[in-house]
Image 1: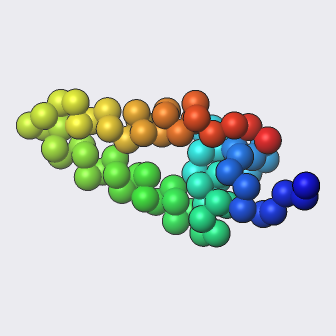
Image 2: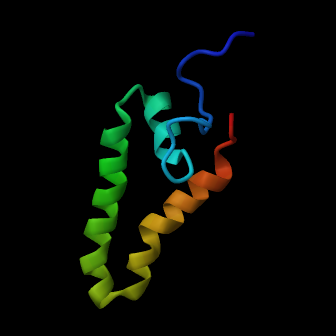
Length: 74
């Protein structure tokens, strides 16, 4: 069965940290910079909340880590 361009796998090439954003961008048909901006924005939004509620600071890294562990590598 041939694979399409929209497979949900972390690429070996074109990844920065773990390939999570590249995999999500490929699966959604978006530019990888858009997905990276969303993750960075999530971190920026949760950082001020962490001033009042410290566990919010770990939201973006936890979401990224969960995707990193859950999405298989090519």
